[in-house]
Image (cartoon, rainbow, N blue to C red; front, side, top):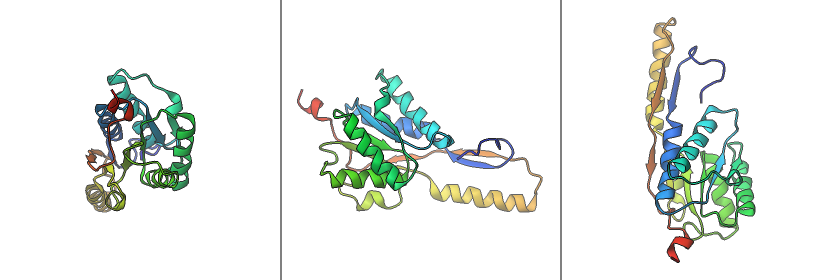
Length: 195
């Protein structure tokens, strides 16, 4: 994440959070979803704000009104995802899809849905964040945002070595693309199937 107050003073190697969040939410919209829940991260994190912006952009481009009750703020923890999905379900009985915006909240939300016997994707479609093995061991396999972790690590290592050799180097900012890895966790919402 971008560290507030240090922009332009330190190296930054980031992903395009807005773009990948917009792509993830758009994939749900393309399947007919209009009531899409978002479990966002802390508002003081640039990654949270960017992913929220991608969510808003996807809704706006499809002319879907923004419904604040479909957005909950988690804390990037398993508990935050668990509590976030419970709040979304309680306040939005017509919600047909959910997008937790980091790995731990993805895990927490998935656990909460399983404990409540809510089926993915029959009852709710689900896109997770971070491909750290979770997508392969869940049933069904999750559609998931995959960050280029190896590339991020390589760029970071190169910048550290460059800094050691040339401490006066001008800080750089690199933005990498993430991808949406398909799984079986997105379905057509029931109201669309019934039409």
